[in-house]
Image (cartoon, rainbow, N blue to C red; front, top):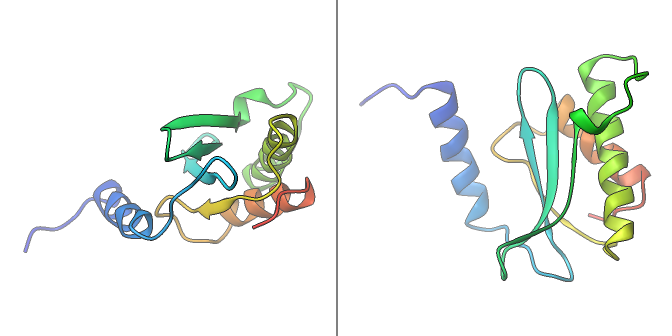
Length: 118
């Protein structure tokens, strides 16, 4: 049996999650991507294959100071604000094959603080 790399294992977990999770226009899928430098999230309508809203650590103000977990919380709040502008209140959370812990959890909690329901 071949040994999986970290990336291959994450992609495998993500596929397993995606079998059950799908987004619609009324309730899009909140997708998380985590890198070593930052975190990104987007709201996807899987029926039409369109991104409805997105937020990234690159969109934070230059004056932002904090660790990567605090950064993820702010990205969650940015995404919630972008979702409100798009008229979205409720989403389905897709952790992207990452553990619901640390930065992924901080992003989800930031999005909830911003007003998203999931």
